[in-house]
Picture: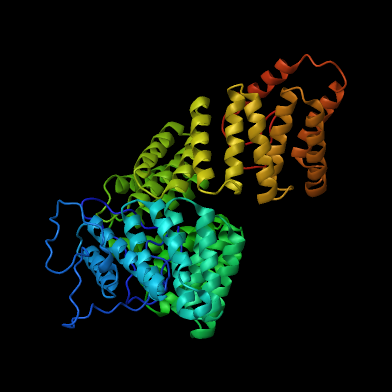
Length: 609
């Protein structure tokens, strides 16, 4: 997630504290596919001046005590601010400066937090009495919130930022408006670290709106924020919103820069990612080729190699495997020569080649590349992030699963999950891995464990604000299938009903995933004796399939048979509930593999994954 800052490690954590001298932050030309670790693109107020050294005023003490008083020893609890100390106009800026210097020196976060809180109290007092120091108060709250995040105290950070947003008055001009923008972006980053995706994006959106009003729609800083928010939408799988923002970013950069600039190349790489996610592979390829040409002109060899990997991915999606191999090999040559044979970038290309060779039936080559990648992930070079290792393990696991080696796939998924469980701010990622783990348990016939994994994934997705996403609906469907195998039919019906409602909104009523869940729900209703409800759903499915796919579609034939049998039994006393359920379970065990493809055919009364 944009702005995601990994919580610092003890004993000397590093915290990104808003710097008074920083301009608006927004790196240009960086690889958009990777999650940013930097702070949000926020403007910073000019650094406060040092306290006055005039002889007519005593220099304030960091603990707020009067000059000449005994200062607290390090082990003592700091004394509360005295009323006279709060009236000193130099105290707030002085304490804020101390807070920044304490963090920069790698000293106690507790002491830095104490300075920041005391600074905010001093500024608040001045604001109440004189109507001044509003912007300084907002800045001190931003600093305190950054320190809270570094300590893993995200709720307190969010509370401080909520106060900071309310302090400036947008009507007073651009300076106040940009202070509010800064608060919204930092609050969005904080919610991102807490896994609250919807709240995070809402804050980013509010911040972008205020920044646009203050600076104008064509300002370069607005372009950087648009790209920042677009990346957040990509990670939330909200690709239409991401595409609109990325297009706006590209238009602004084209107005301000020469054609083929590094900024435009970065925008095109993000646009290619969005197009690929939406299935527009040709458009994605066009953006990547243009970005690659720009990087070649600017002699950015590493960036060219990274783009070659993305081009290889597109060619693989289009079935142009020879061109995909050529692109991967080009990138592999560059990364081996510049980063070494054991770099995780090299491992990631091995994984892609393994996947490609598996798809083309070259299983020996596929397994060889998997083993090469695993050797690198087992002994990563210094500086490799845990997220990078875990992501690689998940990708290799998927290849082993496709190669009908579920036990090996299961081991790798469990290892990846163990790595990320100790990493803060990875709730959504962990939920995705748990869902994949549930699929592997289901394939292995371990249905209770599959249900537990799906349930854990769903709970994390609910907290993260992703309960309306298509992925959430798919996981609900998978958990429903596990419940069927455990004879928890009522629970399965509830899960299928919720999944149906979500997928109808996220994908549309005619999408194959939506129709698959409807089919599962109809079978479950039949098992529960709700024949009329099952008939209504099957008639709807059959109508949609015939209208959209034609009467010769094999799935439509399945629905016709199921509907005919239900209509034949309708109106009679039903004594075959147990038999129907046995048929459902039997068909599930005959084909235990839970496929991702929505177009798979199932036997009569079967379920669709």
